[in-house]
Length: 373
Ligand SMILES: [Zn+2]
View 1: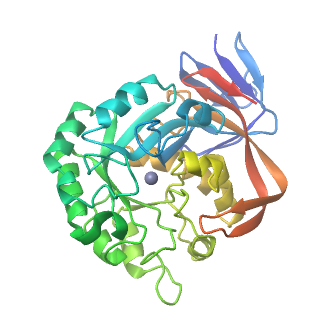
View 2: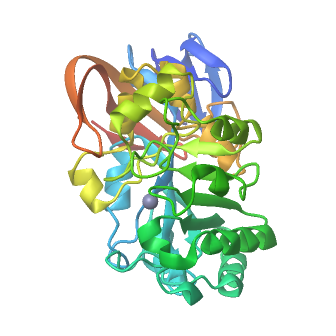
């Protein structure tokens, strides 16, 4: 038979599930979520007192081992941190996507999806920005690749950073939008140290597009001169544009994150922007990134939603991924909510002491026990 996760505290804000509930998994799907379920032939996993949530979706991370400067060993990292869906944030472009598919995406047990970089060379060599030579932003090539790999590619990534785009300004973003329009995909934009004010970037984005790194603290950003969340940013959210953490080694500054949270401007999605350097450095992993926001004052259900239901929606897979609703694929993550005194570091060398953290306990992927502490 299947698995029965017994005695846990279920929290699935997207599906409106909360409380002491058991979760039955059969044939790769969530079969039932209810109190006091009997084993009925299932293997019982005692998760008493632990937090049981949908398998996490990391909306922005990197995975192209050997093919770009980025890429942790995805399966090892994913399963031991409760991540069951890993979305590559533009490591590959039209010229390199085939390789990432062949060597990484098709060999991983974690579910993998990707944003295709508008630059055909992707993120192969970061010392020279992938858009310093504008013809790399080849719209036709991106459209062709996105169509050939439409089972994996959910949208187009563009790094709109001054050092990356040089004199090209927002032209790479315009091209990314053209490619995304043609394939019905979303944009994921990197907005650290942008070449133009935030408002000018936001004006080009559409409902469902994702602004990654919005808490960066380098160049024009989220807050105005008075430290308030910009009006254009709030208006963009009202239009349906999503604001994504994408922590990375460069993109979260605690004072900015704290200001945003104090002003009620929570991240829509919490993602890690994980790379080799990030996993060894301040990012560590997605649960650590989530714990930072918990300790900054974002309520736990909102933190969980930001790594489950909302990224599922951003991927066009609402109700199919990032949920424990019966009938959904049985991707489940279990954590201990540990209490104590823990140090967290941002991308600017800033530190914060927090009283809570999420310690991964076990991970179920498509109905099978994938990892256990
Ligand atoms: Zn990234």
